[in-house]
Image 1 (cartoon, rainbow, N blue to C red):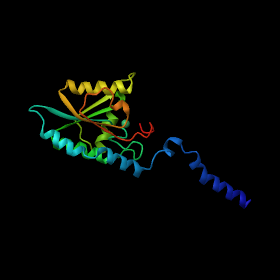
Image 2 (cartoon, rainbow, N blue to C red):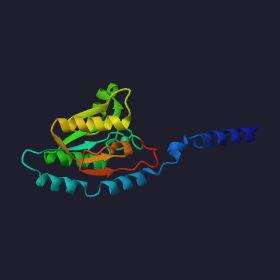
Image 3 (spheres, helix red, strand yellow):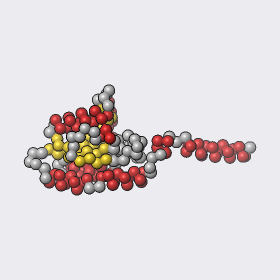
Length: 184
Ligand SMILES: [Mg+2]
């Protein structure tokens, strides 16, 4: 009887590990991810300062930021900002560069997304979401085009998925980890 109880206890302890979803079990550690993000963002603030200093008169500069696993640590620390990206956003605003958000979250999530970003410490100048029924890549390009229509020059584009970058319309890309598609 005692042995049965012991087996049951062992099973309880072991089971959650063995049924953990393979997607997150296969992901690198949070420390690894943070190091990879830091590496991808290296030099980005110096670049913004240099780009702001050489802006043409009247040129309206902006950065274009993806939300999940770029501005927000959605996978590793839900609700928390991705620190190097938050630092870039703060530097941008200090330099007079607008912070424009471009997400594949759809329009129904506008209020929630704005709240998530504010709670994580971001001050933003624009938020463009995907229209329902359209794909992520199309949505991202439509948003960049809408920023350009407002007169913005996108000097940096930060994201973690190929669909964040397809179609151009920005000067410099900062590509954060995607780990083979396991980060959204
Ligand atoms: Mg993303």
